[in-house]
Amino acid sequence: MRVMQQISSILSFFPVIGLAALGGFLSQKSGVWNLSLEGIMAFGAFSGVFAYHYFGGSIWVSLLFGFLMGFVIGMLLSALTIRLSLDQVVVGFGLWFLTEGLAGFLYNTLLPSVKVKETMGFRIFSLDSVFYLTLLSFGLIHVVMKNTKQGLTVVAVGENPRAADVAGIDVSKVRWICTSLGSGFVGLAGAYLSLVILQGFTYNLVAGYGWTAFALILFGRWKTSGVFWGSLFFTFLIGAQTRLQVAGFTFIPPEFVVIIPHLGVIVALATAGAMGKKAGMPSALGVHYDRE
Amino acid sequence: MVRSAFYITGIIALTVSAIFLLTSLSLGIDLVEIFALFLGSTVGSLDSILQTLARATPILISTLGLLVAFNGGIWNIGGEGQIVVGAIVTVGTCLFLGLPPPLAIVLSLAGSFLASGIYGAFAAFLKARWDVNEVVITMMQNFVAFAILQYLIDGPWNWGVGLYPRTTMIPPETRLSFIMSPLNSMFLIALALVAATYILLNRTVLGYEIRATGANKMAALTNGIDTERLTVLSMLLSGGICGLAGSGLVLGTFFRAQAGISGNYGFYAIASAFIAGNRALLAPLSSLLIALIYEGTLSLVALGIPHRLSEAMVGIVFLVVLLPKAAGWLREVNESDAAD
Image (cartoon, rainbow over all chains, first blue to last red; front, side, top):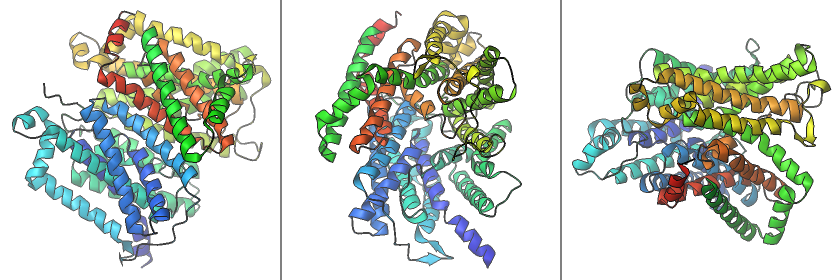
């Protein structure tokens, strides 16, 4: 029983990593890098707490607001990269700065220190509904990507936008939808982090999880299943790290226990690269599509 | 180049003013007061000018480092980590080797250049050999470098000085001299690096090859350029220069290693390099602009405006600078720049 409790307590962090990775994945699949995951999570986290304080204290409304603000940032990212054809990497960094800075700035000016008292009600195996929603999203996107016309459209746009265009697909629209929807997921991940996991907003609360999520898309080789198992694995790694710290595990200094997930990303990507497993990156990822 | 510098400065000035207007309206703080404090604390007196220049120094050095990699088509966002590695090596050299002072300083700079360079080149090696994404690796390396520093100042290098974890101070003889306090001679090294980076990128075969690799890897490859070697080499230089920034922070500013020594300069340098359009000669200007925003917003804390404004402001400035490029307004300017 105690093992079960430990496992579900580790898994309760899964939505943070999983939703962020899934959001970035969606956008990359359509050919757009989203390098602002870290910032969008921070902004989602702020938005969630903001909505909790001003819109009546419902967790669900607050989570939804986090999703919406992520969606709006995704629209901005789309406008800058797809419409104005700016470099995706440069815009990604700019939005990262902007959203992370703005989150801290607005929190400091608009909110007193908010303590979230409400918790998620419905639970199975002491895991809340957002956890199951995350599983559902993974399943849904897996099926959509593999078996539906819409999924194939997204893949086509990410692989060969010119051919997709010739086949009558609106490339900009597909990329726009995937990027914004993906950003919405990232915002939701941030809102879940602040509202449910930390029960409030603190500076640097994202602490690199956005970049971990970003790495997981590469680690999963642009497959829904790969991203899913990767997210699960890293959720356990993060859980192990905090537990080792709490348990006063002294074999490895605590300063190094903290970076187990980060080292894990380096090792995982390096070995995957060394073993030649790099296939799967959408061919047109990061390439602006011009109809000319 | 003078014209695009003029345009960019103008755009940034307008943007910053607009942000101040919004801040003033939303927080109900007098706009004049905001401007007076912002300008007064950055350029209002000799002291504040020196302080701004001192702030610009590590940003400028890191900017130069990053733009070497950016010119080579490598997204080095590990500037923070490379600064930290440089700082660690410098403290180690000055505290433990017991070398005569001038040699200690020279060896600190050389050692941090080498160590940070290798630290950065590791990511480039993975990229060149196995096409591993360098954005992720360099970002993760930041966290690793922070952890190493934290370990050292918590444990082996902590001799119980002060309330929070940090090393003891390096001997006074191994410190850089001040031009005028707080501006130290690292500023001159930074200016020399501007010239060196410019010459490297624009006047040498190596620089030409780096830029060719960055502009079009396939074309470079077919023209007989060893792009694998070039990728590793440009990150070696890039990381090395960022390491010098860390070394300078120890030798001239803090005289010790402490948590947060890199001060987000490695991240601000990304913005600075982009604003400079990856050109070494524009780097001093863009670094100065970032330093102005950093210092200015720092003083605005007195009016109850959080310093987080700085980060958001750099993000907005960064995006706004990109817009005219998209609209083609600067195309003409950029073309006339291609001559220099």
